[in-house]
Amino acid sequence: MHRLVADIGGTRARFRLLEGGGSHWWIRHEASWPSQNFQSLAEAIHCYLAQLSRTERAPIDSAWLAVAGPVRDGAVRFTNLPWKSDAESLRSRFGLPRVHLVNDLEALAHAVPQLQQEQLLPVQHGNAGTGCRLVIASGTGLGVAGWHGSGADIHVLPSEGGHADLAPVTVRQAALLRYLHRELAHVSYERVLSGPGLVTLHAFAVSQAMGGTTIRPEKSDVSPAHILELAEHQDPEALTAIELYSELLGSFAGNAALHWAATGGVYLAGGVAIHLHPYILCGPFIRAFADKGRMRPLLEGIPISLITDHQAGLDGITRLATGHDGRSSVY
Image 1 (cartoon, helix red, strand yellow):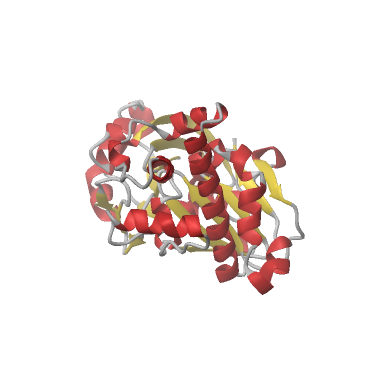
Image 2: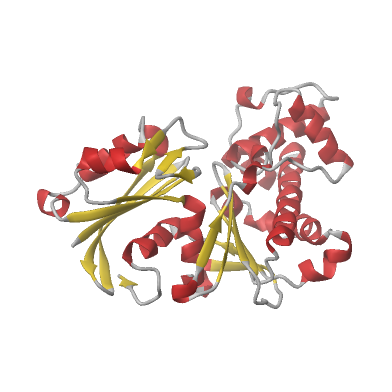
């Protein structure tokens, strides 16, 4: 038996073909491409299936797809791609018995309990309680999901919390909000806590250095990777952008931990968070996370870890596809 799984984000489209059954599965084939290579989810799936032999394609009994957008009634409109799709049309087009669409953060949450220590980098040591656990992913967008339980009893609660209103807590952050309101009617945390968001923060830092001149982020010739390179050479605007990112991520994570009562732990993930981890591990993030007045002692006791594995989301949807009760093995 073959089973198709995929993790489709705003940046990468990762695919995997599984073979097996029952409690034993192994990876038959994998591929990954930039999502921008395709015009639609269906086109990405078609491209992957074309990589497979006729023997591999024939017995695919279902597809499990982690998608970067809210899933409602088996349909998704991607948040950071001009795509929309639904399970029924994909099932019909590709002749598959079943197609399952799952929010990408929901899939990622299913992977976290199975991560090994070498896939996690401690950010704050604490004592994990019995409350909810939380994963926050900063990449092309900003996602958040919570879960409680373990093994067969795990229950994941997906959300679109990354689109909550940006709430400044410092004079500089208030200036940032005013800066963003020049162009945006609604300013969410995702606007600053993502790859494009880091570019926006850098444009703001340059604007401040130039006395408040508006710098349109979409006109910027820098990328998140370039900003990181500039920071390594002590460029002041790049360092300001990354410091702001760390502060805002800490504040957002602390708020989310309070909303979800996430005493079981907070996990950070996503390409931007991974690449900026040296800065997340230092002061601004931790200070902003715990700076919640009378709730400081609670937040200081919550363990925080950074997930360093870029494929964790694909592993999560794999667990869902093969039976996420902890009794299935994938090799």
